[in-house]
Amino acid sequence: MAKTLSENQAHIQAYTPTKLKSKPKFAHSSRKWLLGSLFPIVLIIIWETVSQLGVVESYQLPAPTVIVDELIQLASTGELFEHIYITLYRVFGGFILGTIVAIVLALGVGFSKTAEELFDPMIQALRSIPSLAWVPLFILWMGIGESSKITMIAVGVFFPVYLNLVTGIVTVDRKLIEVGKIYQLSLFQQVYRIILPASLPSFLIGLRTGLGLGWMFVVAAELMGASQGLGYLLVVGQNTLSPETILVSIILFAFIGKVSDWFLKLIELRLLRWQDRFVRGN
Amino acid sequence: MSLVLENLSRRFKDTDAIRDINLSVEDGEIVGLLGTSGCGKSTLLRAISGLDQAYTGTVSINDQVKKGVHDATNFIFQEPRLLPWLTVEDNIMFGLKGKPKASFDRARRFIHYVGLSGKEALYPKQLSGGMAQRVAIARALVMQPDILLLDEPFSALDAFTKMQLQDLLLEIWHKYQTTMVLVTHDIDEALYLCDRIVVLRGQPGEIIKTINVTEPRPRDRGSVELANYKADILDQLDLNQ
Ligand SMILES: Nc1ncnc2c1ncn2[C@@H]1O[C@H](COP(=O)(O)OP(=O)(O)OP(=O)(O)O)[C@@H](O)[C@H]1O
Ligand SMILES: [Mg+2]
Image (cartoon, rainbow over all chains, first blue to last red; front, side, top):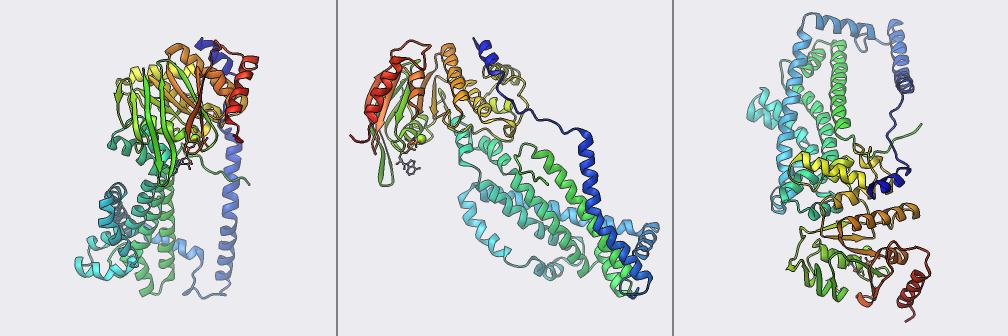
C-alpha cells in the first residue's frame, strides 16, 4: 500500500536544486570583475597622468608607480612583513578575545532574565562611550605594550558581536521553540539544537561587523603609540613627509581588511547554506 | 480510552476561549474538531498537546493525567515548521533517539512512505509547500505517536496536494491505527477523514453537536451520504441561530 502511495505521488513536482552550469557562471563572474574594476582602472590612469604632468606636487600626492616602488622597496628588506605580521597579530588577538567575552556574556544575557537585569544596563551604558575614548586610559593602565592594544581592539569587537548574538537569541521564532517542546527537548538541547543554530546568521553578522571595527581600532591603537605595525607606518610617513609610505599602509589596510572579511564571508556562506536568501536579479 | 478531556476551559486575560469541554476519544479513532474561526479549536488542541498549560480541567492520556507534553502525542501544525538548517532527512530524524543507524533506517522508511525518496538531502528552502508539509508529517509519524494532533494541517495547500495528503493520512491510520484529533474548518475534509465530528461554536467555544460518520472507508468524496452530513453540519453552524 505504501508503495502505490509513493508511486502516485512521484509525479508531484520537485524542486531539485539545479547547479548552475559552469560556463555561464564563469561568464557572469568575469563580467562582474570587469564591471567592478573599470572605474578604479580609469581613476588610476588619470591619477598617473596627472602626476606625471606635474599638475599635483609629488610631496602631496605621489604617482601610483611611486607608491608601487615604495611597496616593493619596503617588501624587499622584509621590514614590511614584520609590520603586517604584528598588525595581524593584534587584530586577531583582539578579535578572538572580544568575541569570546561577547559570546559568554551574550549567552548569559540571552538565556537568563537575571543575567540580563544584572549586565545589560551596564553594557548598554558602556556602549554609549565612543570606544576610542578608552585608548588613553588603557595606555595609562597597561602601558603601550601589546596588552593595551589588544584590549582596545577587543573592546571594539565586543559590542557588535555581543549585541547581534543577544538579538539573535531573543528573537528566535516561538514556533520553532514549540517544535522543540513537542519533542520534549531539555533546556540544554533546546539551546544547542534550536536556539543557537537559529541565531547563527545574526552572530555571523556580528562577527563581520566586529572584525571591521577591529581593523579600525588597530589603526587607532598603533597611531597612539607603537614601534611597529601598519599603523606605525602611517606615523612614519607623516613624520618623514613621505605620502607614499602612508598610501602603502592605507592600501595594505584596505587589502588585508578585505581579505579577512572575505574569509569570514566564505565561512558564512558555508555555514548558512540553508538560509533562504533574497537573490537580486540584474 | 486513550484520550479523555474533562471540563476543559481556557481563559485569556478577560475573554473565555473555550468553556467546559468534555470529550473522550477511543483508541484508533479519528475525531474532527470543526467550527467557525475563533471558536477555540486551536486553543483546545494546544491544551491537549501540553503546549499550553494554563487551562483548567483535566486532560488524561492513556489514563494518565498530566499537564505538559506527553510522550505518546505528537503535533502537526498548520505550517510545516521545519528547522531551516536541517536537511529533509535530519528534520525527520529530529525527535529520534537511540542508535544512529536504527534512526537512519527508520527515517528512510518514512521518507519513502510520504513519497520523498531522493529528496533526503534537500534543505527546507528547496521544497514546495506540499513537500514541506510531507516532511512535517513524516517527522511526527516517525515517532509513532499513539495520538496525533493536527491543527489545520492541509489548509495552506492546493486542492490536489490536500487530497493526496488526506489519503496519505488514511494510509498511515490503516497501518498504525493512530488516534487522531484533527482541527479543520473544511467540512469536506472532516467528512472524508473522521469517524466523529465535534462541532464547536460560539465565544467561548462550546460543543454544540457530535456527529458520527458511519460511512465505511474508503469514502467517496462526492457521495450523497456525505452531502447529507454536510447539510446537517452547515445547519448547525448557521450563524443566524
Ligand atoms: N495567545 C492568546 N492570547 C489572547 N487571546 C487568545 C490567544 N490565543 C487565542 N486567543 C483567543 O481565543 C479565541 C480562540 O482562538 P483560537 O486560536 O483557538 O481559534 P480557532 O478556533 O483556532 O480559530 P481559527 O479557525 O481561525 O484558527 C479567540 O477569540 C482568540 O482571540
Ligand atoms: Mg486555529
